[in-house]
Length: 312
Image (tube, rainbow, N blue to C red; front, side, top):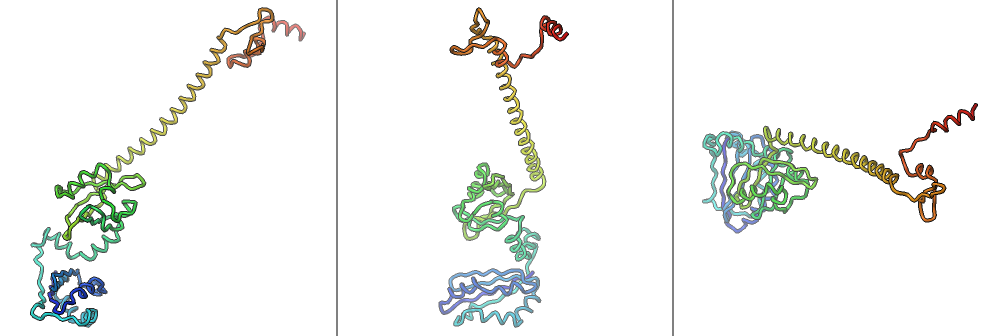
């Protein structure tokens, strides 16, 4: 990989126009095969462009092409450059000296496809925070996982209470290792993310996260199964509690009837009727029939003999 560095200085006070042009540029160079990325820096009236390419031949072919020349009219007219401050340097990268070694070099080479994956992918979760911890940018994957509008919301308000202390420590600069954050969507189902927090170059923070894998994912799956089993057991316990309550109610009703039968009732000494209310009397058989679930019907021996004799 090679880097091509351009430096130029504006002489006639039009640096704000140049800056605006870079912000709204057409981005045609992104379509050129072999182009790996562009960064633009400004220091007062001086601008520095750093482009990355797969190799020098690819860069030279584009630089000498009509496509490169066609991009010049996009620069605001009337811009005067200081010739003494105009510089172009092309250098080959020393991969082993790159931050994180070969992995860092590969990350730089894949900057553009990674940016596209970050923006539209569903696995990698990317968030930038302002100095107060509020969300200033979140990709689509994080927005879906959060399950709510996140713009301007403090990140600690989007995670579970148990995650906040660890998050605060990392934002304070006390944590460097990856941390596990539990997003707390409004649907109530916690979602875990394995996250890395990095202080941003312009202040604030950047957070890059992904769903946990390997042992942690297996543990979450196990916990999910246990939660499902507990829910089933809770429903079964509730069903058994209802059945027990019904049995107790029936038992209490049966006990009431037994108590009713065993109560001392006023009984007429002449006709043997029982008093059931104010000035209300019933014969014993009728009272027992109406107030007891423990009666059955049949004939005593004498009555049975009499009935048989009558039938003959």
